[in-house]
Amino acid sequence: MPTVSAVRSGRAAAAVTAAGALVYGWQVGRPGVWMDEAATIDVCRRTPAQVFALARHEDLVHLAYYLVAKLAWAVHPSIVSVRSVGVAAMAATAGLLVLIGARLRSLPVGVVAGLLLVVNPLASRFAQEARSAALVTVLATLLTWQLLGLLERTDGGRRWAGYSATLVLLGLANVLGLLMVLPHALAAGAAGRLRAWTAAAAAGLVVLAPFVLAAHGQRGQVYWIPAPHLYDLHAFARDFLGGQAAIVLVGLLVVVAALVRSRVGWTAPVRRALRLGLGWALLPPAVLWTVSFVTPLYQDRYVLYVLPGIALALAALVVRLATALAELPWARWLVPAVALALVAVVGAPAQAQARRMADGHTENLAAVADYLARSARPGDEMVAVPMEVRMLRQAYPQLAGLADPTVAVEPLAGATLEGKDVPPGQVPAALAPHPRIWLVRESYQADDLLTGSERAALAALAASYRPGSRRVFADIEVTLMVRRGG
Image (cartoon, rainbow, N blue to C red; front, top):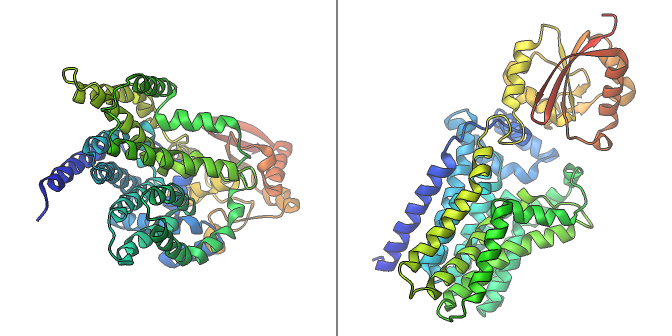
């Protein structure tokens, strides 16, 4: 029979999960689809055999997510259906933070952490994305919840099998999620269970080894990631805390907590929550950023799964301050309420921006597709630069009639996302028969990252075509190129 504390924590987790679902689900279908989401839609339209064929060439790291997304697509073929996977995953993450607080013997820390995640605008932004970030985040949080339960037990190693299995699922969802072993190693060492944890983690990593090696063979897909810079760390703090002002608020909270000299707030559960949260929040991004000096891999969204760790560490500070000020009226609930309100108010503009149709997800490919479908004439062609923009045609069937003459092998035939280019020297001849070509280009794509065929296409269009109508959709420029003398 569940204990009173278990029932209480379960109800609190359910309430926070429901709050997360309401916030994350608000206007989930409004932001325009961006390029990575177009890839998800494209894959959802493929058969399972075609998806596995794709994974042999590229995007193996996303295969597990693609299979989950296809299930959602099968229920209802829409971007809202696929994004709902992220909404459910992030809401479950908020609820799991409550249960983590309960296992740390501080339910208030868990509740505050869960609610901090609910009001964090970055959590909303990626909960509403048809990509794997939210799924990876909930698996990392589930793994941490399992770890805390296992560290408290001294019975046989059989119970570690569940931890190993979840670690495997985390690695399949995102190989970079395996960096969670770093804060877990620290937690296991502090609890005196490092040997048992090492055996469980090693078992999971051994199972994952073939997958990791195969994914490493596709590392060329991240050629576009630049070498790390110091401003990456500033952007990490700004975005993950919810904005520039949030950094100031957090700094004030830390200073105030340090100035309150009462030892009442520093209970063992609060200290443990703070240590776990800090390790979770800082180690994976710091290591990935450092490794990127050798092999550039660092992107904020690749370590989104540390967001619950940040919430846990901040919640520990909030509860510590509230407990230290317990002699003041209503301090125990007023301090957390003020902290949550401040984060919510500071993050409100970012929450609104993430839900804007035009640029909530940076790009609005649905608007681009609608414009092209309305404006194109029979016989028009489309040149996409860079080649990933070709996913417009796969993701939006209304563009099926706009062929790309620079494509030598179509994506489905080549079991790729973008297809294969015509060789650079043959590009001018491929374009020549077509009097009207729609150039669809990502405005932020640096020329030095373009392929030879892409540069040849831009040069041929500039030499033999004149620009006509032009529309800009956030980061996407659509220009009608008309052949000179035509």
